[in-house]
Length: 262
Image (tube, rainbow, N blue to C red; front, side, top):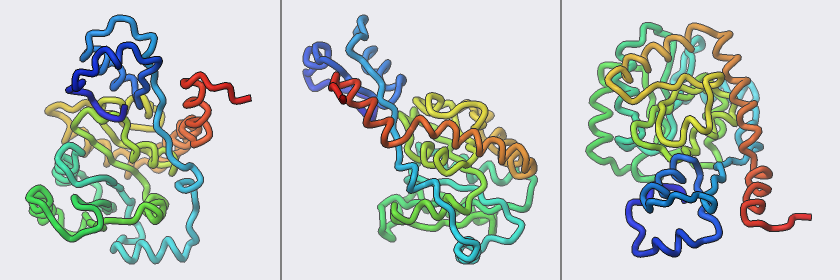
C-alpha cells in the first residue's frame, strides 16, 4: 500500500484475513487498520521505500557543475535550494514560494523541478498562480520544467539544501529519499510517513500550522548562513539513506513474504 485507503470496495474480510498487508510507512499501516477497525495488527507490516543509491550518490565534474549553474542562472556565491516533485497544491510549493519573501539572505537560488503534466508545456491554474507569486521574487526562483528521471541526479548534485514542505499526509515521499541519498540537508514537514524516513539530525521538520511559512523562512536562512551545520546534516542524510537501499528493500521484502533466501 502506497496511499491512504478510503474505500475497501467490499474487500474488508479479504484484507483482514490476508497473510500480510504491507505498507510503505507506519502512518499508512495505522490508517488502514483504523479504517477497518482492526485490533489485532499481526498481519500488518511496513516495508520502507527505497531508491537506487548508485544513481543519486554520484559526483559531477567541475565543468559539469559550472555548466548547470550557468544554465539555471546561478551566481557563484548562491546556495542552491531544491524543490522536486509535482507542482500541485499538496506538495507545499506555494507555501515555500511565499516563505522566500521573508528570507533575509540574498545569496540563494531556488530550483523548482517538475511540472503538472510530466514532459509537457501544459499548465494548470495552480501553476499560473505560482508564477504570479514569483514576480515579486525576481531572479530568486528558476523553474526547470520537467527533468527526465535519468537526469535528475545532476540537479541534486548542484543543490545545497532540499526543501520539501508537503502539506498533506505524505505516505513516504520518494523525493525525501532521493535527497537523503544525495547527501542533502532537508527542510520538510511533520506529515504522514515523512518523520519515519528523516530525523532531526538530517532535517529541519516543521508542523503544518499557521507558523509554517515563517518557519520555512527561518530554516532556509539558518542553512544558507551556517555552512558547518549544512554539511553536518548532509552527512547525516547519507547515513540515514544506508537503510533505504535496493538490497535492503529486497531482503526486507522477501522476509515479509516468509521466503527462505538461503
